[in-house]
View 1: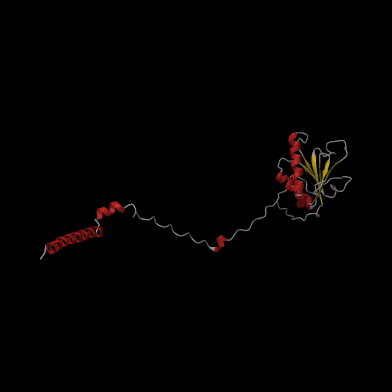
View 2: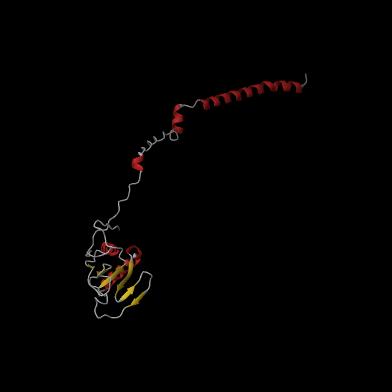
Length: 208
């Protein structure tokens, strides 16, 4: 037997020992990973494995009757400061609405004798403006005029007069001749004339 053949035979036992040692080490490592100690697991994963909060209870089911929208109760316009006797429906509505919108108005004239048809037939009101010549009075009169014209269709407005100027719902206006006094020239009140709409029934209701 030559030296080369002897050398090959001597290498095999060492290789067998090395492979056996590696296999044993692998078994040891796998065994350690497969069976972790309780203390190590708690230290590593305790925060991650925290219990989830309990789910909230499902909302209670409302009965169908409770889910139905409630009908809206009509908002009735109360009687204002105007004397309503002899006034027609549109005129009363305008008077009550102005009273509700401008509580600082303390006097609204209604039916009275006049050469023109408006007041005698209950077709017009005079919204009296406190301190009408003052800046605050003028501003209040301007606001009443704007409110009436903005609601002209609802109130059946034919025209309005304020500070010697007549205004119509179509946006036109004209200055009137001087009649000689603040009342005659409409400097102390806003005159509102309506189509009328007929006289109210005894149980007539006016809505906002």
